[in-house]
Length: 157
Image (cartoon, rainbow, N blue to C red; front, side, top):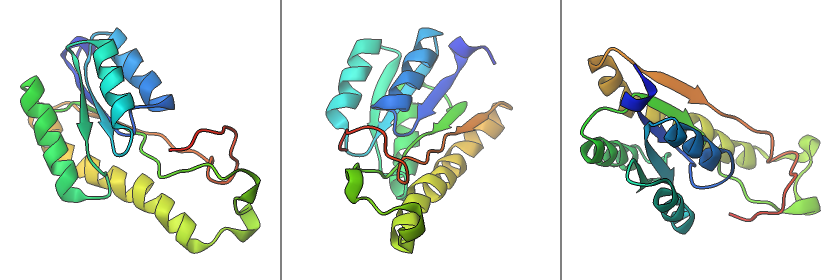
């Protein structure tokens, strides 16, 4: 499928790597749904910057019903099925030198990461799979990070 015919959903798409991916896909002519959970102002600004082929859609990817609604909203807006997913959502906040070190990270902190990164990705993949199957085309890109262990930037969520 040509990029100009694709509908791309980018989770965690309002800032950082997600915003860069949105700019790249939109720059190549794709229609892009920029997902956000808490960065609504940034998502709306990015959608306005990139034009009519980009929308901002809110959902917590750990909530399956919210993901289903987000996918339905994006598909209704663009008039077709999502063809490409970039799973980029991350539950992360910077706490500098006070953060737990690798040898001391509690399971609760890891579970929070897994819930967003793994469970969230599964929710998005499962919600978009029927449309990908129906159009005989689909791509999934999963992005991970070690920022919760090795913080490099002061940028609170």
